[in-house]
Image (tube, rainbow over the protein chains, first blue to last red):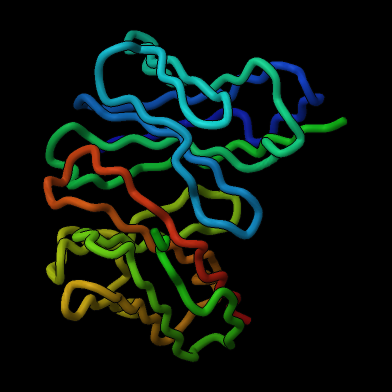
Length: 115
Length: 116
C-alpha cells in the first residue's frame, strides 16, 4: 500500500515570492508521482508528473518538482508566484505495477497568494 | 476536445434518500474512475472501470453505493440510502488506455453532495 503526506495544510505567500509545497510518500514498491491543482469549484488538473529519467520535472504554469528517492520526497516549487496560483495542490502516487493506475492522494495544501 | 462532464453539479438531499450522479468521460477513454473527496481530505478512489468491467471497487461501500458503466461509455454512481457522512464532492475521471500504468487521469468538475 502507498501513503502520501503533505505536512503543510496551508501556505500563505506574497505575490512574486518563491514557494515550496512539500510532499513525502511511503511505498513498498516503486511509484510514479504526480502533482495536481484544484481551483475553486473545479476538478483536478495535472501540473506535472515524474515517471522516470531526470529527477527535476517541469510542469505547466512555471511549476517544477524534484524527485528525491532517498528522502521519498517530491516537493513542488515555483520561483515567483502569481495571484492566480491561489488554489489547492495535491500530491499523488501510483505504483509501477499492480496498482491498476489507482492514485493515492495526500490531504492537499492550500496555497494562498497575497498582494 | 471536450473534457469529462458530470451532472448535477450540486445536490442537497436528506439522509436516507437516494441520489445518482452521472459522468460522461472524454471520448475514446477506456478507463473511468469515481473518487470521493471529503472536505479537508484528498480524493479517494471508490471504483475503477476498464471499458464496462470493474477493475477495482475495494473501497466502495457496497451496502449503499453502486455504480455501472453500461456500453463502456457513460457511468452512473448511486447512493441508497444516503448517510450524513456521504457529504462530499464526487469526482469522475477518465484515462485513455487499458495498460493500467502511468496513464494521465483527466478529472471532471465534480458533483458536490450535501446530506442533511
